[in-house]
Image 1 (cartoon, one colour):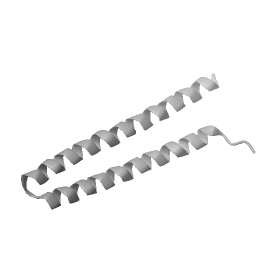
Image 2: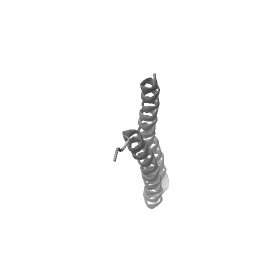
Image 3: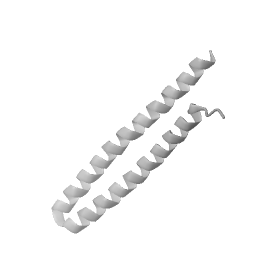
Image 4: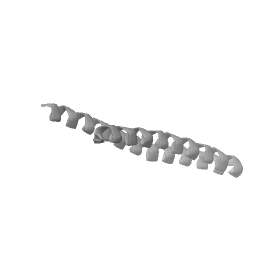
Length: 81
């Protein structure tokens, strides 16, 4: 039985993308809870900082996943030539 690594790589990449989305949702919900508990101006600062950090962290992971997918596509095209 031969297992093609392209299929496994695609599956792992898709799962990592889904996991990244789940982590982003959890971080955003945690940010809202923390900001709500803090209240006042400090809660607004927590909300903004949490959202910005979540966008940066999960955005970087999403970009890296996309780069990996593009490199895999290019590699597949080069192998066909």
